[in-house]
Length: 384
Length: 228
Image (cartoon, rainbow over all chains, first blue to last red):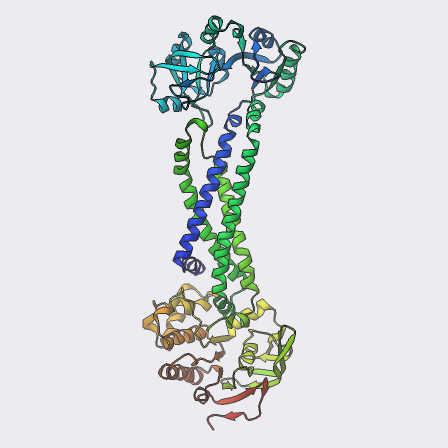
């Protein structure tokens, strides 16, 4: 009987209930999308491995490091493998067709990134062809590239037209792997540099270092930086996660604003539901007095009111969560490769659920308390 | 059955204290049909609320079947009302989202009756008020008189000893009011219910066995047996 009353009460004013549910659904959708945007910002951090360190010039990423550091770094205790690369910064056809592209030493790089899933044939093809390139599946799909296609990138930092052959396409082994990147042979890059800009040759933008155990990261990083202390190009070595967080920190103000907006959305949902419940309970003060008259306890009335609040919020919340998935796909398509990894995580859905429950309970508590505390004789006076 | 002794009740309106009932004493026997009459604001509904355990007196005692209801806690009082008092109101006060059947079933939710037993009780109560053919109707689909009959079925479904009725015919036309009053007569005569009815309608009041008049919170001495 209680469930029956609860459901019928929730839809007594159909238009009001539908508008409230729509408001909650939109707010939950917005909250979920904003959380996914924040997650997307941290995608690089989430995809970082605890077994990888990044060494760069201590002054800035703009300054490079000599290639000769590679052997010295490899000699440090705990270092298993060393790879290196340069940020290339080229674009395809039009400047707006921008994506992340790097010149890397391919053999060591692929060993360091086992999360890239590539077929054996394509791996061999990529490693053999000095003009070969490896691209993520999302990027290949975006431009309609297939293995064997010729691709020309226009350099911005390193001017000129750079010719490549698509040798391999990778997919991520898990969802947070960025599938929008473009890699090519560092040797091809360096040989070209030797011809057109000799002073830039034999320099790398960063080293990626594979280490034996994550707990040794701090000691190894310290040892590597000590090797190059007082040299012309001092190094800064940090975990891949810290390196990625450094990029995120540049956008911290925006992230804080997004977080603030998501908090404001929660407050808005709370006000919308609380307003509906306050209006409903005020209209039904006399009915609750009748329940009490008949012998129902205040607890029963509170359960009716909070249950109604929960039901409205749950329906809106479930609709909102369901709408978040297609909205996220549409959003991801609209922003292109700006957010290479744009996945709704389990944590976002969990946070949605927590917000829904908190809002449902909070919005019902005050009206329930008021209905419980109204004296029967006062409540009955509101009839007629 | 009901013993009201030296009961007073005041209300506060801002800083003003309004005395609604002044030293009221009254005895109502089992099976009695009493009409409490008086002009608006005389305190008759307040007295009815106190006897039915809907409100508490400032002073004095109210005993029903030997139980001093002033001594009961809120939850005990709620249980006592559920078991002992049936309520009939001027505006019927049915729950609009429940059908006639469900409205009558409502008080039985608080009992330990099984679903089948509840169904039997509801059918019996609705049959007693000749509303068994309107089970699935919502209050908005019933006339005022029909709603009041459903409300009476709800009041008697738990078989309480006392029925309190606050202006039960106040919102009805003469024909519907007559049906309701006849029904109350039957409940009193055939089922032995003690009925306390508040009304300012002499025509309704005359149906009771006894009448008591309240004016400005004082019970006047011109009590009369309306049937004598």
